[in-house]
Length: 339
Ligand code: EPU
Image (cartoon, rainbow, N blue to C red; front, top):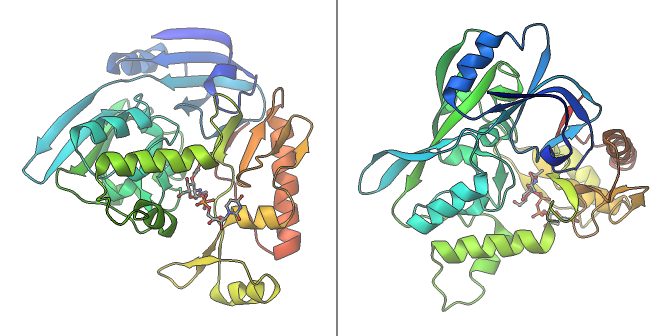
């Protein structure tokens, strides 16, 4: 187990925020986890479990222990002619896992290509894109309970997945370290084109029969055209969640903003596009100092250089207030703010 003191997190968060942590611990093997408990390093200190840092905003120096999960590996756990269960360790990059599936003809995660982050963070946020969520193919996961020093196994129901939500953001927040996740993938052709924009692009040439590689390439192309590469322009993907309103509220909004679109949920409520609201409120492409709203997608806040976590938080507060005032809609952050 490697422990560093007074360690810069600049290269460990996709916003590139330059804050320091009192302690930074690399967890590379399962025995590192046992050593961590034995060391009593966490006693009386706060800690934060870090994946790839692609969905966090560090608001201040972190007065505690950062646990950097570097557990690697992928194994087939079970299979039949139709399906297989792949166990993926928490420290693998999510996109590497998706690429491995595509190369081997396993269907189920291709719509989730190019989502930045590590596999261990995928169930926490229940990551999703283009009509798919990781919970669609989730089988079970293993985690290490920091308090009891024991392994626990959780199935899909126990993880309580919701839209960018799970038990790991609620009851089990900061209590367990996810060590590996098992996904049930299809060995037979099985696609999800429920997202209208994807369906349109995939079928734009009627003579092309889409295969797994084609779908994967298309998703990568769409993402590249809309979303900034954090290696070039520092960002954490969607900063806010898409908000949900009642159908009544949606009809009221429609009277004033006839071009507003909404997606009806099973319970009759309507999910709005946060990007639409932010763009309509005039924020798209706006820059304040070194922070701003990306000019090609209004849901992405960016750090142009030396913005601090507080600068980005202050911009996000302004946007939230403006959306509340203009539309009467509350925007919730998708990124996890670490104080
Ligand atoms: N739109 C605008 N202005 C913009 C961008 C989009 O008005 O600047 C409107 C358009 O009408 C567009 C609609 O918003 O049709 C939806 O846009 P998009 O397809 O880009 O999806 P999104 O709802 O903005 C969500 C996820 C993304 C995911 C995409 C694709 C959330 C918070 N975000 O964004 O996930 O890639 O769908 O499925 O649910 C992430 O979580 O970090 C993330 C990038």
